[in-house]
Image 1 (tube, rainbow, N blue to C red):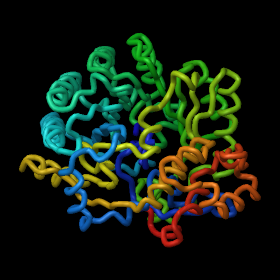
Image 2: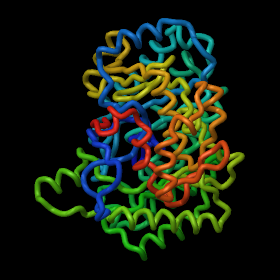
Image 3: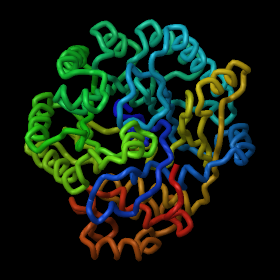
Image 4: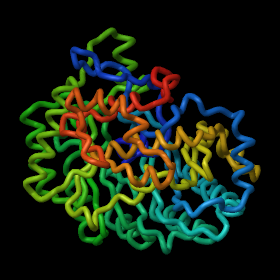
Length: 465
């Protein structure tokens, strides 16, 4: 994620991502503290069961499903993690590497190509076409045009994305130039995600971002000129130094850009960020705005962008046209597709088994160079856990219908989750309307804090990652 990756998101976390990359060791907080202070920890939910339960002992099962022919017609996606950045943001908790020379990056790109070749030989993906591809990080746009073309050529020889509905690429504004943007269009990128985060240079610098605002406008002009079908911009509500006046300015500037998609994250402080470490070592108070303020800022952005015709597509995302501006990666991952994980620390899911690659670049490179898949840990969720996973992730979209779950799992989620739904309806977070659940604005702005109530009891207080 440009803030991310993951998780994914536009990554996960990431693990933004809405980025799909690796995250830190974060404990779930069912609700933020009563004082609403943003303390160290995270409550962003990107998968289930919790990552902390994934173990190397499950790898034999992963290898079994990899060696088996396709067991279903689940959509297939590909996630590639590019772990390089010009600078580590103070709020970043992903697996990233800074100050890497050209030789190290070239070695990594070659390893990605080799891993794709190994994955392409798996019986589990024979005859299957990619529905989507996602380049996350780190900073995918850290790669040169030459490296991008090499990667596209090598990947195409084994797994082609020519027919993919969406190919997303995360960009840090300061790593772009006009020729590189043209390269992205040439290699088949259809959706560009630009990590703006803030339009105030002082705030960007205070939070450790490598780019400045002039680079945002310059990069955006090149992106518009290239004519990508979809452009997303990321903003973060609650960066250190944020004020009401500055946030209003951020909203105005975002409206001027008029991107097809706008993603707004609420600043968190996972344990392994620079900010969190400084708080612990110096004993300082949280420098980040409290939760109530951040939620108000996101709500203000939703209202303002709504005046321009944007539609809310999740607690983090707004889109210009719900018919054409669909986030294929998110929509499929949140509905149980197969996802091939490529690159150091990447997360994937294949034929009912979650898995993650090795999370140290040295180990990853050595393993791939030996001709072995660099998988590190895995977990096979039960059918009930798969039900929970898809339910909680789709709740993040703001509304979810029971019918698809009845068709897929044979279980009515409105009955299965009757107690948490009643609890949260009573607290004003959601409304149950016939066969669907609709989150209120109040619920949508803090949806991740609501989701552990749907977990199996033994998972509601365990370490998440």
